Length: 234
Image: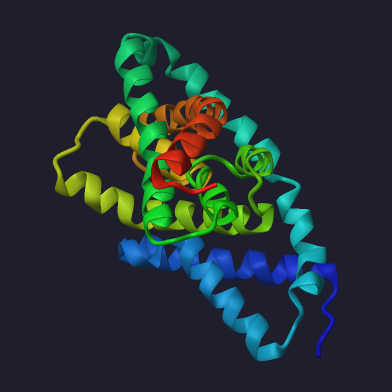
């Protein structure tokens, strides 16, 4: 069992991501999304070398530290595009509210119908919001925060990979609509993908992260309790 140094963990992660990003830029194949490919390669590498996840994360925490500044940095394109986005305040609020509602119910109702426990349902409910908010909501509902974090990451990756081709297939051409959909469905990872479509799409996606997070934090407890009552679960 190997015990890599934090410096090696950080270096390996950056090299893998840089390689995945270069491959994606060359191919533009949606399944080669840099985040998805990097996660798959790192999981395989840790399994083959038998490196414990806790040991790897001693270096991973260094990268994780920059997550909050990266999210804050989304405010810059939002500031630049604020005038354009302010022209569609009501559609933005309405669409984000619907997105928040669908985000919660699309996890809660299928899980309940399939016989999931209340704790599991609570863990899945905030899957479409950014991790800190999702964990807070999960704790309030009696969910399992580690499971919530894993589901949030998986949701973000799937949204970033499958969201763009799906939106284009159904005829979404507006950068604002594209960004709102990506941010509301797949939070930060989806926003990173939306930025590739242009600053307006990235700004709309960043706005959707904040609005969806606030709406989900307010509505999720009520929606989960109502859904559990309708399903006859305690």
